[in-house]
Structures are given as structure tokens and as C-alpha cells.
Length: 80
Image (cartoon, rainbow, N blue to C red; front, side, top):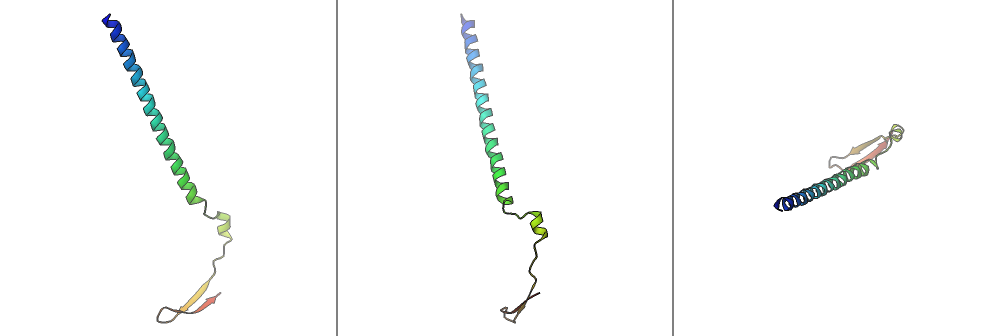
């Protein structure tokens, strides 16, 4: 009779441990999914505002010459 009770206790303990391990795996999976989503969202938010390489190749930077007085105030701005 004791062996049957012991076997049942062992089976219940094994079942409990398997459920606990499965729960831990689900928690780690959820944390990993949240982490990956956060990384992709961060990268997307950085790269969405960058210009395309084609746009950069046709961009002309305005060339200006600024002349300041001795106090640092602008006197002239010459565009070339």
C-alpha cells in the first residue's frame, strides 16, 4: 500500500515539476519576444527618418561665407 502511495506522490511531483518548467519556458519566451520587439522598434524609430542614399547623392549643400565683426556679430553672408 505504501508503494502505491509513494508512486502516486512521485507522479504528482514529476507532473508539478514539468508544469513549472513549462511555465518558466513560457516566461522566458515572452521576455525574449518583448526584448526582440523592443530592439526592432528602436532600430525602426532611428532609421525611419534617415534619407535614402539616392537622395543624398543629389543633395546640394548651400555654400556660404559668413563675415563677423570682432564681437562675433554677423556683418555679411555671401552665397556662392
